[in-house]
Image (cartoon, rainbow, N blue to C red; front, side):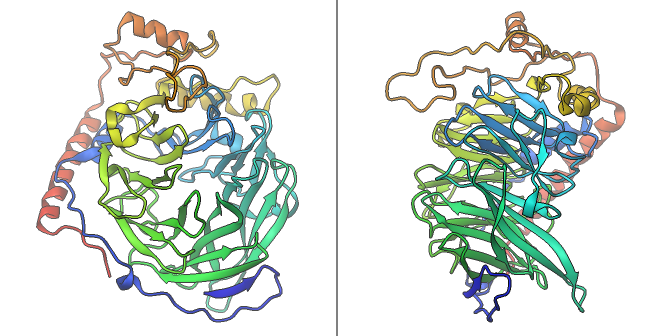
Length: 519
């Protein structure tokens, strides 16, 4: 490790290198199935649908939960944000333009503070945005954050009003044509109203993730890679709230190029997990690795891998299990220490995971899954235990007092997105949603709404839905029916057939020469 003072004028000393990837212990390689699998099913379904204007299919990419009220949920979407204050019974949608522009393939970092304030990284303009009126308007955070790119956000687990932001900006290009950055961590103690710089970070580092240890708010981790060599991972660790830092470097496997701090043990600040994705793998189709460190990022051990991207990762509230998955491999649950092989519990196109006290939230991809967000009290019990929390057809624009920036900004966007998510006939101005449920027995698991557990059918609404189901969805405010007579164009059918053939050929090659991690 090398020591780094947060003072911008301090010097740096040479660091000692950690072992190369050959010394990072890797588990036996898991053979991939030759069957088409969830990724192909998703692609075939996408071949019969229309992509959103930014080129991505509508779906969920991230989840933030209120620190004291588990019924308040904020979803990051490929087409904006969705907010629920009632455990998923109703959702209010905000368009991408509301958080500054068409985000293309950028997913915003999001948090919700203790008073319900929404804090979001701008999709295209790079700043930090704050909303105190359920997304009806956003204000750009100013002060020291102005003119810098927001990279990541995190909430201090011990202070519901404290938000930390990882910021970066290119300040120079050196003689070797390499970028030099101003990187720093800032924090707000008043739910995003005002900000101050907490710590300056090295200028030769591409920063990527920021996390605070749940059991020790003075323990802060920042990860990234060296500007000169993207295969040199960097972890900055502070034990004193950002006053001083220790830096660890580790050689990343060939073909990768990022190092993400993905979770910290709830009671042990020295135990944390890292994802190592494929270089530039925005769609989650390249092999990824899961690393564990039990000594505060001084050393690393590989405990799992996936054939496709690992877009979701979560640690259980007790820290004894982890969940991970992505678009190709499905959802896995494993012992947190890697002491036993991971169990594949669901055949889902996983796009995000969040383990809360009530259970595991999983972002999936419709129409390959019957929902875009689901919840399971015990995910290891299998796919059948996941209860839908949000489906795309339940999307409704946020109701804001006129005039509002959301109404002006999102009106046209809603006209474009509603048919794509199946909500073109949604009754978004109808009566309040009706939750069908029953009281939880004494000693039962935590509930989503504090009084009853929603009972939602696992099958999405379709042409074969009963009249009762149509009525129930209409009462819920966002019912929609599609015309079964409308078929897919011929070119889409050809594309689906091509994808099926390509997947089978890919499976044959895997049987002959299965993927093995590069050393």
